[in-house]
Image 1 (cartoon, rainbow, N blue to C red):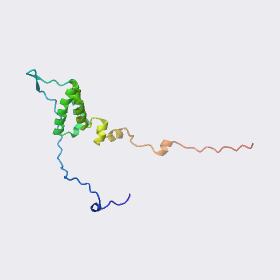
Image 2: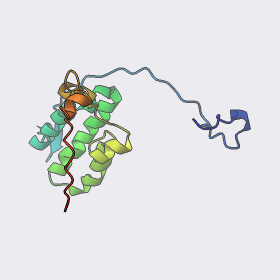
Image 3: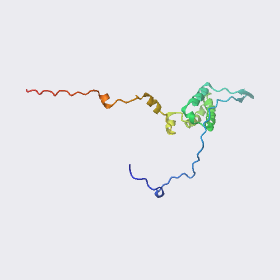
Image 4: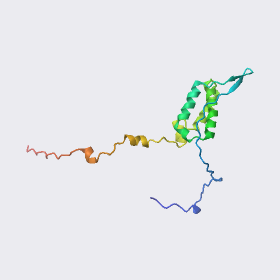
Length: 155
C-alpha cells in the first residue's frame, strides 16, 4: 500500500542517534524484602519501623505485573522509593512530589502505563470467554420464511 519508501541515503533528515544503543542482557531479579535497620534518635540507635501502609505498598509492587520486568537496579531504586513512601505516610508531605515522580517510572497509574507504552495482555482472558465455534450467520439469523403477498383490495 502506498509508494515505496525513499532510499535512506536520499533522505533530508536522518534523525540518527549520536551514540549507538547499548544492548544489555536482562536478568530478572527477585523482589527483596523490606530491610531491617537502625536509625539514630536522641543519640541512641533504635530499630526502624516501616509504616503498615508502606509494607502493604511494597507487597503490591512485588505482586504487580510490572515486577516481572524488574532487574536488581530497579528493585534498589524502588527500595529507596519505599523510604520516601514511609516518610510521606509518617506525615512528611514534602515527599509527595518525589514519590509521585518515582512511582511513575514504574507505571503506577493508567496514565503512567500509557506514557510508558505498557498494556496489560487481555488476549488470554478474551480467548477463555470465546465459544469454541462462533455461530454461523445462518444460525444467528434462524429460519427465514417468505410471507404471502398481501391481497389487493378493490375499493
